[in-house]
Amino acid sequence: MKTLHTDIAIIGAGTAGLAAYRAAKAAGKRALLIEGGPYGTTCARVGCMPSKLLIAAAEAAHSAAHTDAFGVRVNGKISVDGAAVMDRVKRERDRFVGFVLEGVENIPAEDKLRGYARFVSDTVLHVDEHTEVQAASIVIATGSRPSVPPPFRALGDRLVVNDEVFAWNDLPRRVAVFGPGVIGLELGQALARLGVTVRVFGVSGSLAGISDPQVRQAARKIFQGEFYLDPDARVLETTRVGDEVEVRYVALDNSERTERFDYALVATGRRANLDGLGLEHTSLALNAQGVPVFDRETMQAGDSAIFIAGDANADAPLLHEAADEGRIAGENAARHPDVRPGLRRAPLAVVFSDPQIAVAGKGHARLIPGTYVIGEVDFGDQGRSRVMLKNRGLLHVYADIETGRFLGAEMVGPSAEHIGHLLAWAVQQELTVARMLEMPFYHPVIEEGLRTALRDAAAKLALAREALRPEATEDEVV
Image 1 (cartoon, rainbow, N blue to C red):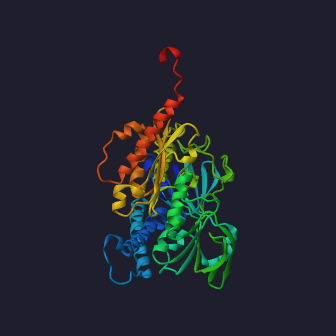
Image 2: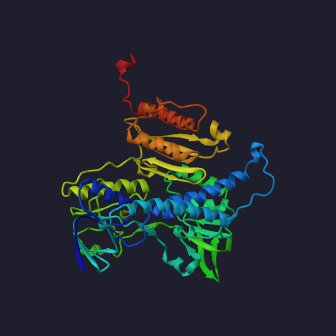
Image 3: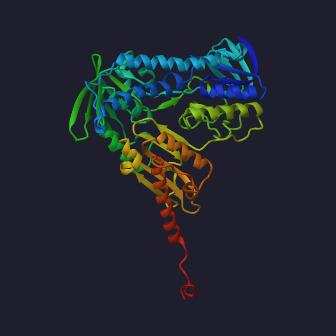
């Protein structure tokens, strides 16, 4: 076993790992990027980009099939060539991966080490039994993988996770989706719009990360009008029968049904890739999920020289968050022990369903009861949305009663990816609702719906403050 010495060892060459490497090098430190699997980020290979390619095809099919309301007649039947759809998904996916690989190829060979790393101590790693790496600091950026509950594993190759969907050469006829989170909802709706028979099953009523009960109910009603969705399903049994998956469940009308599918797409969450790292050989404290306890402002795990970034820390599994965390981890690994808080941006999450879903700033579940008001707009009669027949959805904005500051929002509706950005910027700038209403709103645009919600919040803030005002004294009355 040979020995290598470096300032910073980075385990994992995904989004967070590459960001950590760039930050470490910018600080003038020696950095070693260790990767055992294929190069290329989760986003490019099996996440953001291939899923959006599938969604784009689904939106094209849906739009072509729904032109009559505009007085536009499409002659003939709309057909979906599943093989052609998947060919474009894979071809464009490979192009995006290629850009990532080009970046990795440009990294000097002496800064890369192939193999799987395992901790021997806080600052020593063994890589595939061929190399010992001694580092002043270490960044864990090993990413995550789909988590599959044990009952599904008996389905064998009829069980797929989102990674495997993008390896299909053609579209199947029938798919049961388990888990209406972000991945399950996006892929479930896309497949349904491409002509696949889809059933989406969830538990506990959760839906795409929405915590506001009214917004979640609005979303549930919208999506149930398009495809089968039961976020609080009673699935009685899933079994493999030949090359099919048989699902016995209680339907929304309380009848018991048994259906067969070509695949069961399990989208029940992801787990951090930490097993096999030998964390037991470190000084790190682990939480109940086996993830090192860390400071999300510095990415430092305890008081050690180990930092953890990206999906590996199971905090905010989003590409832009992974990039920020990797940069912070790399900078602090370079200056350890003089670690400093890094820039953490306002929270922003988007679901690319139709209508889209967005959560910006503090979501409903993070608010303190009695300290805020809710401004609302229903997009049913919103002008521009109705013009485009996109008038479905609900937006809730949250404002602090004491300060009038905008706290966050949850929405399902048109252009949520764009409105979500505006709202996240407002949170990061610590704007008040009054200040936001001073901003320009063009006509006619969907953002006028946001202004309606902000006006509603402003009116409720005035009422809430009036209710809190001390009673007028007798002299004031006279």
